[in-house]
Length: 95
Image: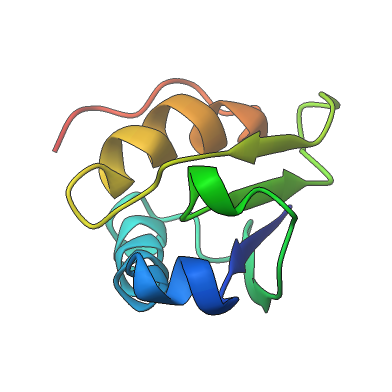
């Protein structure tokens, strides 16, 4: 699966660097580093809703999805509710 994180001007100002770091931490924490490729991306055209991520090529066969309003404080919640389920794995134990 690929997760693209917008690093365009608006998202950069809203903390995209912290989101990238947070997502790296989540992949490691939930031991899915081999299943998810993080990529930096430029504007998705949804600047008002930034920081925006796009989850593509889901392993559960579901459609691509935009994840909006991600920040350093909610990155784990967004990961667990929007990204992790697309891996087709059992729900993780809360850590």
